[in-house]
Image 1 (cartoon, rainbow, N blue to C red):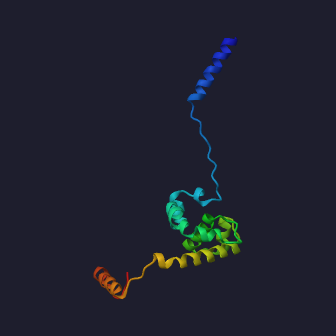
Image 2 (image 1 turned 30 degrees about the horizontal axis):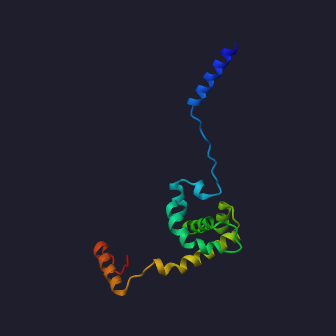
Image 3 (image 1 turned 180 degrees about the vertical axis):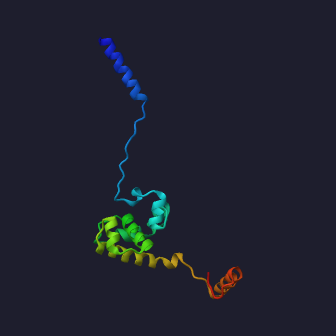
Length: 150
């Protein structure tokens, strides 16, 4: 009986070894980067995860770190601001969504707006008068709509 019992145990272990074990991954649902898939993230924030993490965050991270009075890490502050800019929701509704108080949302949006506005001259270029005339003419050629700068 002892040999049969051992044989049975070996067979059970062999079956277990060939079985697929599903490892559960616990996501942090308070972190929008983990809570949303790529398409849903883009719909909510109007940017891809890559753009937010590798392009926008490095531009504002240092200023958001020095933002006193806010306990959120810079990436979550950025996402709160981007969500507000993307949908224009009421601050208290947005705060409920990301579990942040309305005054915190207001401070974050205000600070992020100032940071982005201060960097606008580095990244946004308005055309000169000659370039603007060329753009107006080309736009008129394409759409026959006068006085439009594109």
